[in-house]
Length: 361
Image (cartoon, rainbow, N blue to C red; front, side, top):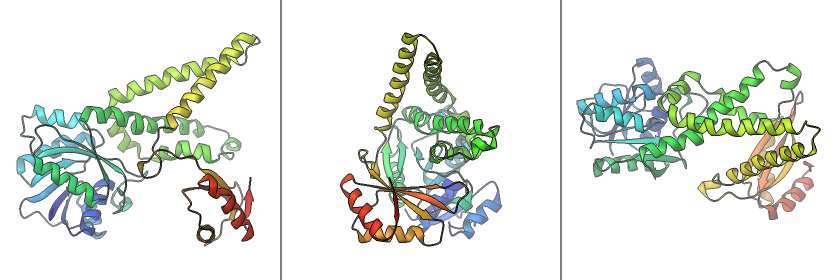
């Protein structure tokens, strides 16, 4: 691949363009808003000069509601040897293109499983896709050259290709992406009218659950409108669990011993099923999830403190597998949770204490 055009210079399109430019590909940028294309170009994502002829690959990175139209225009104009889109829903756009009677041998649907709460070209980064799954949904009609161009794009963006059927993809993202967004938003909405005293008690748990609730509502409305059936099906299953859990919690208030016992068993069941589901979430680098020990360290909110604690962990020859930071309410301090292999936890705790860090049990 020597040349490409990115149509739609939001977060995903601009990030893909930055990755391609960094690896020597000449990238042209097109957007319905010329200012966004100029912004992306100023960031080093390519040029917003007009195309002078067909390129190797066209990347359609517009909102789901406009994906099929943009693809149809690109295919009819013959602007590239191959066309792909990066929309988060795959079945709908393909069916729209089929209804138009277009030759789809030059098209493949794709979806990079990566993003941020922020949108637009200014949120883009060349490493956005590194190590992340990138779904490809070829069909028997897909030309081999187009599939290879898509695989080359994934490789240049340092992502991991995953081949799926389009409708299976849509059901999967309804479960692992679209429904979590709605659930996060619904939980966060409960904070809107909450007493200020309650809000001040927010800890890492509520921060984790509501993090993605900060996402752009307009963008998510378009995504959900493109995949409503599978998301509704998933939410219906959650609604059933919610109804049963509410009944179980009410039973715990009953003076009847049998009802209370039934409530306990029902709550235990949903918690254990949650344990089993969480255990299936892939761990580092897509490997099986691993159990880590947490070494909790009190840290002041001062420049260089995180760098110092990681340096001290390195001197102890301990690899920190993951990290979380919980900020103390009303204080310039926080708790850094360093996740390490169980055998390394005592070594790290002793080494950090020796270097003056305060370890919390």
